[in-house]
Length: 393
Image 1 (cartoon, one colour):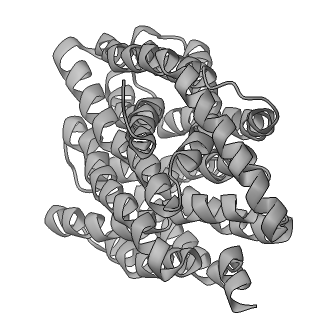
Image 2 (tube, rainbow, N blue to C red):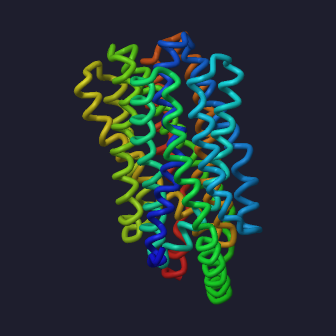
């Protein structure tokens, strides 16, 4: 395959799509699990918690390992496992078996992200925002494709239709494995270029700034996890829509967010990464207020679009800024900003699931609004782009 180096970012985008597809497919399956298997919202939220905690444990370790030794073939294994776990969930009646299946899928996603984000960075050249936004776009697009595939499979074939996820993920895993040699070449080239740049500019890792960024990213990710997990429940129980419609509402969030992610990195290349994160999180506050207030299906649908756009404008700039703050640990930075932060954000899920069961989903919506306010305020601690510091000094 004779592609230009920068074109491989689109292959990484497709890989990211397949790796994250299962996470969003699980969210779309939750209304079906509640209605067809009689599970409580606490139990379904518990599956989201398992997805998060497994990634929280494995992501930093795998990110550090990726920085020490190049193993691009692990991306193929990660994609395969991510599809396998959730693809089998429709065949399972035991809650513990579901937990194991979700854990397998979660670990698969954790395996993919560190090497995936590193390679996306290395093949991007000078336009890091554009390249990483392509990669991030795949993860957001998974939020559209995953639910559509899952809802179609279950609607046509019953709960066992979840197996439909195995087909695209297996195909992508084979393709990534075949390209692992080429990816390894680009990693080696990127590492040599990084060493020269570090030697010339004496760039050091800014751990203090990175952990401040991580704190903001955790809040952003908590909002994303809660939107994907509880907006469908809000539509099911408060707006009184069917489980099919409720399961598919996450596609509106995902498609709008994917477009925002695709353009967010490109705009951030020109306007600045910190500014883009701040604008996105501040714009989210009034959108979430309207979502919590309204009982109109039409208004909720309309407002979900700018809400998802605002939230995801901050996504790829967070990843790029994290890698800029830790130029010597790209895999770890990508693993934390794309994986660990999202996983910690997911720890809110079972708590809010319990609130939904005891107090109602409408109360959860107001809690989500409060988290949005805290996230917007927290942007004051965001670190400055290291490149801007160099230019201004």
